[in-house]
Image (tube, rainbow, N blue to C red; front, side, top):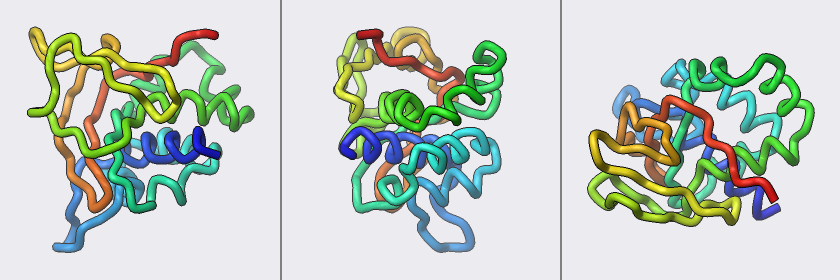
Length: 159
């Protein structure tokens, strides 16, 4: 249950590019849906049962892969994950950090625990990276956290 909560948070944060639409603040999930470039992430969050978690109080920091990031995975990977909610939740929660972490809070070599339980490594030399994935848009604020858009799906360590 905890793993699903973190996964939902990660996915929701990943989905958004605009925290405000029509003057109304939106949560991570609604922000991602409105962005239009996170359809795979949103579908994954739904399949993993994490929507309610990511719409929850938070705050969460989500490193959200774009549709293009999911499309870059080996053929059949996304379909296989959608059919395995537990594995999907493990990956999605690896994209979520508890608390609201803005780009100005990041430092090179910083290790951050994810809701999955494994750490991610932040790089800040030559641009911000998360486990080697580039942050392409940072600090998209939502009512329950922040989304940083990344260009790759990051996978938790095996084991």
